[in-house]
View 1 (cartoon, rainbow, N blue to C red):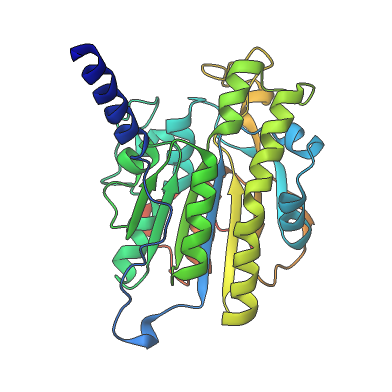
View 2: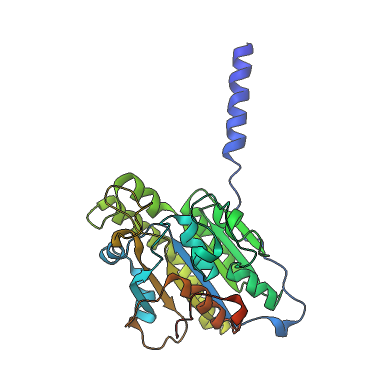
Length: 309
């Protein structure tokens, strides 16, 4: 009898923990009382971890293709020659400076200098507390380490990319947000296990699956632009590429690891298509700030300059 009781008790515990997945329903942040402080220019930053440019171009990615056709893109962005890991890559993207300034050289973040070189979200908050910000990610350190010092209204992490996409879509449909940051991890996960290479079907499938997750999200964004007269800057990029053997760390001069892509698209992008030059990954933060009409202060000592949209 005791064994039977133990068995059913164990089932109850497993069911309890299995039902603890964070909600994907939108819990909208409260807006400012003054409607004039709400903004028409908005930002969606999408990070696809470990996505090589050449593999993305070979994969069937209709949602990314639409962004490239309506925007501008580079397939050989400079993500920095050193520290070919996620921590340095995402930190450079979000702060607009290289590791010698933001201090992140590995995935431990023990040497980070976000106090002097914070993520662009902190710059936005300094401009106005009325900007409503959501960070919905798979890579938990994105929230817990990189942007933890910035005041964000929605901070969520999920263990599956599908939950990231569904949660983000719900927030985009139902809430008034100014900035949304998303991170997808499946491409990197498959790359480590099967190899980062355009000749590997599993790797291409992971890219295609991620693109498919973007479909409902982008439909919601396009609807907002039409119905709400909003202008969304959409930026898609990645932290690193990888090798066919599944590695990418400590390979700072291998173009398969360091040459990655960035896509920039707003409502009325000028000079669409492949860019005539390759902006560095540190150009993303100042491009976002410029779209939001937040002037870059020279005292910030950023390494990147805004991409002309």
